[in-house]
Length: 151
Image (tube, rainbow, N blue to C red; front, side, top):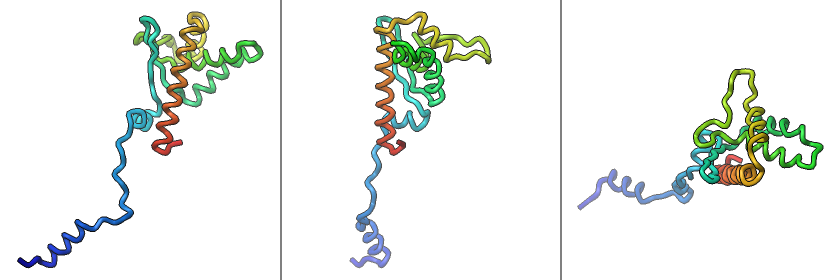
């Protein structure tokens, strides 16, 4: 049985694979996908019967948290003030409800959250656990960014 010229050419194209053909890309992890689509990651800390939900911060939020903590700069607990400000900024909900309720457009929500945390939360375990989880989120952001060449 003789093959046509077309059949011979078609078989040749199917068999020939260029050596520089890239491997099919792996699927993105959940963190990589979330980071690409939303720009942030979220997590939660469960302390007793409370669930505290956190998210990574935008640079402006980090800078604003630093400014709030700056009033404690010359104290022995300046670092704890900064950690507290970062945790307050990162908290999105506690038991599904916002940490604080904004009353109007002129109100600084981050300042209100920081003051609430200062007045109502203890360092251990609440703030220290929140900060540990926030650092874990930052590590996840770095790993996801590196694996998709974002950072």
